[in-house]
Length: 398
Image (cartoon, rainbow, N blue to C red; front, side, top):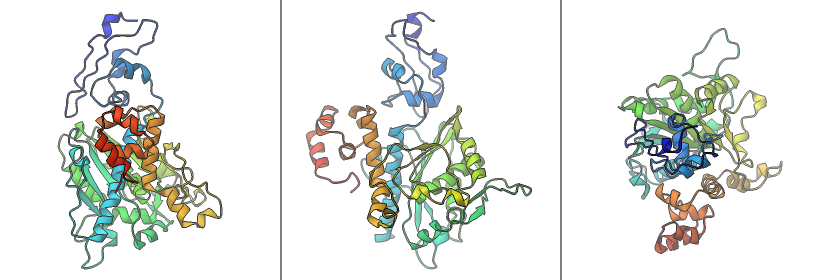
């Protein structure tokens, strides 16, 4: 094993995105503590997982406590993407009130993401002389230039009908072998929403691909795809499509929430193989075990969920035959805001400090919603006025 001075001031700068990435291991542990050799840290995804406070520096504490992560799942990343999924719904709610309203990423997150979003429209739903209906948006992280593709959940009667189109259709963006009797098939309703364009707007699929193809320095960018409910289904199609058909990005990864099943076993196998990173899943489905939406369409009808399944967020009322007809219980178990709050609670349970989350721009009201305490927020650097304002709200999304 190398001597103790070997680990002092070890730096690598080739992992930079839009800023220098440094790996610094100082004040080494006693020789009896096993330490991974520096070259094992050169994997970008491993570094990101270890760098808990996202400061671009790898402390000894971060290194030793997480040197061999068993999963790529990141609760903080999941919560950040869940927030963007909620904003995709808020955009649509704003559109329904005033279709001319120029919705933007709200403060304080307009300091993190480009606030003037690029919109994907549900061209399948277009009615003559009516405004195009937004089904999601694209933004970028200002610092890292990472791209965020955000899909919303079901918002109107047409989409409810699409959700119920459980028939299979051949997946148009993946290869089809005519001799294969069990072809790559997906949910008809989701596929129609995803690939249908119009004379006045490209399909949601083409809108995303055009945006990505127009970007430069792709090799330095990661694309994060997210969505809740119907948005989870759209994000699954979109992630598989991008991984297969769009090249040049550092990575394309997905965190989705409450997603229904999307395709048959052939589709699922392709998705799973495309999303592996160093042999481990790089994309995740996050599910409330009491949520009915991820339980449909049924496996008996030829559908199979994609990997990897991250449960661990049970909330609401356990399902039974009577409760599946109770609208209030179904909505409670499916709530996108509650998914977010449970992710924040999971971060607290896993020991993520307020200081780390404040550095990642989580608001005081978001942390309070996930059971962080007032004293923890004050100790972590939030002001008394911030905490007082947060305590006066019932939800972080108002």
